[in-house]
Length: 187
Image (cartoon, rainbow, N blue to C red; front, side, top):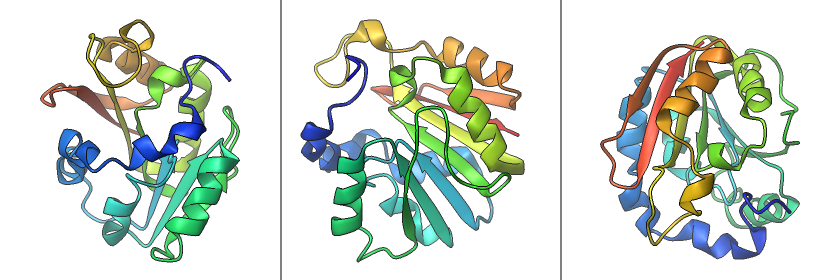
């Protein structure tokens, strides 16, 4: 396993309610600025912790992850209570879902783990409907007690450059949160 990737054996950390304080779902949703959605895609969904708050806002939510451990946990603990969440096993470079499926594709605390962000960003582009939105949330590039080491975190300007190179437009970075930045862009 890459040193940059989250260890699935620590999945209990993903379900810490404090994360909702650090990353308020209502704030993220407001920044995505979507009026109506039918399909959301959560890339790097892990335990579905940030899938659950968006369930009431959509008809279907695809929770995608490369870890079978995470997906098994999701199937067993989340899906019985939230049948509109659909677990999907993905590869680092490919998400096995149809083109132009989603109104919103989002990644939370994942971008810093990507060896080649361009590949996954092209997949996000492919998955989005025309006019769909991409939401990326990641750790600020500074030392703090929580999260990954600062040296593997990404600057928001680098993430924005990656997104623009993938073809997205109208990228806006927001750094109002204490520990994270977010970027919203449009297909």
